[in-house]
Length: 244
Image 1: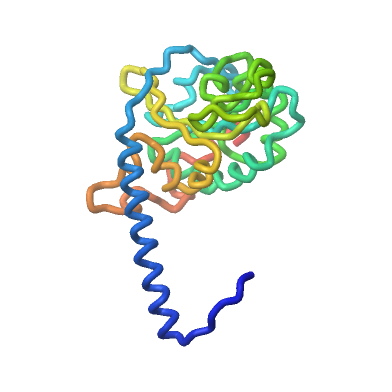
Image 2: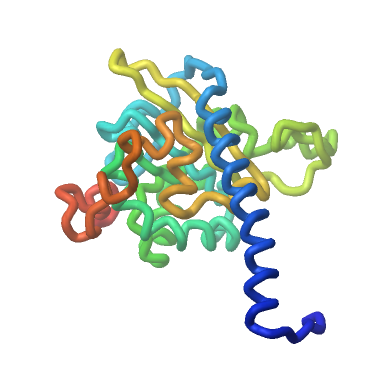
């Protein structure tokens, strides 16, 4: 650690207030970015992706489970891997506390990996996570959303990831993608975030800030207008899990 100046309590308060002004400016900037994020254009999902999971074969539209918003964690777990990525697992550990609040606030969260479901299921159970996890094996889903890379990518040594062309590093990389389903059942891709951008997800507000409806709180309201103690929601997180 660096050496720190030792000061009086009054001097510390003055220094802390100066830093607080910068922190408040940073929060206001984050709020503005979240607003602009919600104004991004959308892309209609035209492909009929099929996933394999605890409920058998499901479409992307099925994964919403009655909600209008879906967050997909692109969980690094390749077809021939023995277990999921440590970094993705670290992120998944943070999801469980958020899950019950999300599923009761019009947001479904599902992990998707290219590993066969027969490999995913025992690892999922071993880790004790409650979120739903499905396999995209045999589909273009991971490739279309730029988190899995082909032998051709490896051969040319380049991939398109985090919205830029960069050097090939590994056949799977992390990210989150967000989707919206309208009343007609049409599904739209609204947002994706990769690399260090995923560090800001994990908390309930971190997830809500990447969804089309945002925090979706009443004007002038706050979290007490919709949040309950997690044991008082009608729908428990376990109902959205593959082994609950």
